[in-house]
Length: 141
Image (cartoon, rainbow, N blue to C red):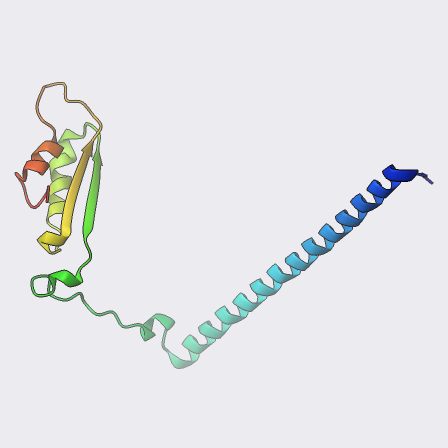
């Protein structure tokens, strides 16, 4: 048997006591996680059984109403900024900007931002500059 003397023995005893405490805490946390999993499995089984017996799914209880008319209730809509990062994608830039500008949203609550990180070799201005000028759609608000 190993005999320790003085402060080393006390420190070792404290270390072992701390490890025992941490093991017990880990066991308690493991049991709590297991119980949580069991509770959620039982809730899932309850919802599935209720759906099977009544013929109604849980999502049938939610009602989705359409948004109000943008022209009449423009202040109800939140402000939206659509950000379009581009990088030398000349072939698809304009189509993406046009699609974003065609979103059904009140004009004063809607903004399309085009950020370009690429450089044009041919010296033409980028799609972002055209969108900021408002050449197409509602971009650049």
